[in-house]
Length: 110
Length: 118
Image (cartoon, rainbow over all chains, first blue to last red; front, side):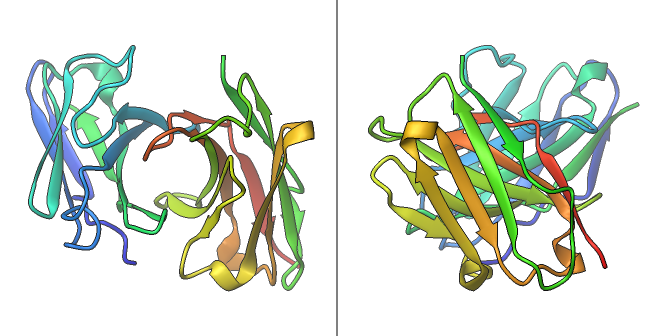
């Protein structure tokens, strides 16, 4: 069970859209529609942003969206804002009630 | 309002056993479908899923750490306990517990830092 692969960093200017990829295998990301995404500001606990590949919890801005194709899931942030600067982690169900997180992506707002 | 709070030692010696407690509020671990998981994060590094316990006492562990972990619940106290044996400096991390109802973690505790050092 290896960590899902994410780019180390992604950056964009305010108002732009960015996407973060999350690549797994046919045993995790590719097998289930159960990828979730978490936002983590420095020194804070993670916050759920997307679940079941593309669903948004109540209270999360509709600027955040999720998608998946094959073994790769993606988180898109549209209309990038300064408050979106944070670390983002994907997580996938990996069968038998086990989970695997991604390597994490630092988002910088230029 | 669902809240979780982790507690435990901030410093443990190598080879010792770590015991962490997660105190739950706003929900019951006897409710069908509910689970509580433990996730850790070494300084400056990524999140790592450790273990999960469900309302029916089903327990799941990270395959790479399974031999060292034990997760239990005390529904009457609204607590979940994680023990990790044979601690090593590489286990230095912030340990989080989180609520799960579905295949994600929708509410997290603030985390508790643990340093492993002699």
